[in-house]
Length: 200
Length: 129
Figure 1 (spheres, rainbow over the protein chains, first blue to last red):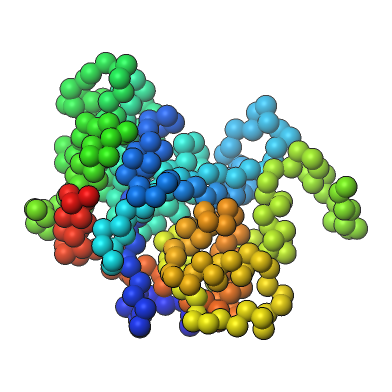
Figure 2: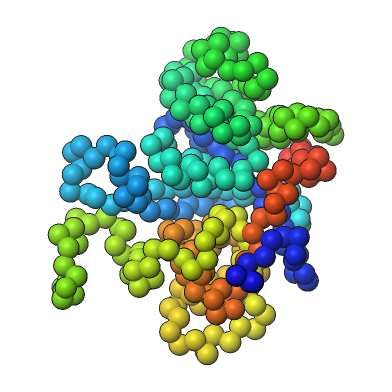
């Protein structure tokens, strides 16, 4: 359709470049909190419809009468400048909604996997997903107040992470802390491409 | 009162049906947009001074979309603003595209492999926040 254009063809109106970053991790790992802390607008929510394709793998035990549902997606925006915006998408908490992950991950710059040291195994599916698709990611170890402190090396071993995957301790509630995680992701993306790491 | 549509009775269209049924009534039951693959962060721009009066068949939601797209808005923000599912918004945008009321700018291919200047701008921008 001729009214769908790719950016190189744009004329007149300036259209910003929008980069997608995924915020993944297990249920309750702080994804929504991190998106909220970083977004310049109140975090927005949209829905996608859980289709039959999704229902195949959905556990409907106990909810047999409900054959349809929608999946909420949290997202936030960070405006870098007039030409550049970051969109942060929290992945749906239930890892079984892969069809939505594929949509979110398409064209994404990279991902942050939030890890909760009390339930490390919860972030395995996220890590597997990004590893299998070659999407660069960093692991943010969310420091919950009541969690035991582990060394990053211990967490790396437990997650069986490649040595080049950056790990960052963070507090998902704190904007500065969240920024540090995003910066480490973008630097990782640059390294991933074999280009010099951007420095301030 | 529920309106019974002759010939369209399905056992799942009862009080317990999930919200799926309702969003797609807005699209006349169409679940697939006429234009495939509108990215979540594709920018939708309304044509200047669109003549909406010429299209009486359009729903209020179509008109709202055109209004919101006046300043250029990504698909996902349109969905959030209208509180509609992404799939529904894509169908409605397909209607607007086919009538030439909006233009869609898909993210440039380069977005998928941003060059170092863009990555550096992102890092600098984040540091400056």
